Image (tube, rainbow, N blue to C red; front, side, top):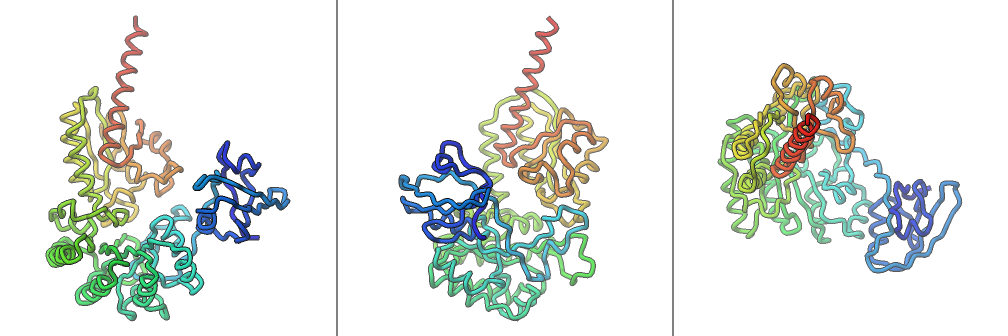
Length: 447
């Protein structure tokens, strides 16, 4: 039987008063069977009177009538649905380039329009069925995040490693005709979907504005584990320089023509090219920040604000871990912060041994690589780790090394911080205050 399994009931909520408990299954709302969280949100969004059909843990069926104020929550939290699997075989798929013996979920490729709507996951639409498209339109599942890569059908089939897929331009036009907002991306593969192919793809997507509200171009990611996979050219420093020099002016022309930023380039292009970022105003409301677009300029802006506000902290030494690509601007921030806060902060860039040195982002650093880097160094009072390196809610790195194991192996305290300038500063102040309290307590004990 379909339905949503209840994971948690908020104490004192409507559901709690109706004796709904974790483990119960919500089958339908006002006669509508529930397939997932989207159905639940859709059918409970505005109705003040609800009829809930529930299967209890003991398989007893209940019907519960609910009268509530407009917008009042029922107090139900549901287990996350398993994502729909991707059947593409993309030339540049990062999952295909993973080393062996990582956590099993890391090898799962999702291609789920529901997660695109709920979480901003990118999908290709290549696996979208007619009923799915009808549901997107009926329930107004907008915005969606769509990987286009190329609008030429044959080239796109080559990139996705799949034949017989619907022409993406037709799909985008259908969604646009129903006022579904879309944010799009192109994973750029040198020598394949760049040049005149990229010009055509950008032109096609611009013509779908305002339904297509943004387009991000991001470089493909290559690991050291591409055995038996097609050869692909990496984005080099020279390629990145030529790309930005050619395309940045075109992005500015589009911005002036459309009166808002539309075409964005991943931060990695600027870092690789050693070129300055555009003014922060040209990122608009950062529609592609989760795609690695604008993270560095926003970090630099927030870092300047923190530097203006920071105050001295009790002196101590700490080591901060970062990725290779972010080391430059992070180190600049930490140097200035250390001087103003009177703290000895040592930034350390970790080379990625797990995926290979070409993977330089902080979020893909493994625990063993950190250990190999800092072992033998004077870490100081603690080792500071940005939270993007840790699996949320699990306290482990990509290679399943836990924070506890890391502390044990480096013989030093490990502190995880929110990976923003303010998040780091707040953590630094917290450490300083605790050290001051410890000193005071020891002084009292000696008396």
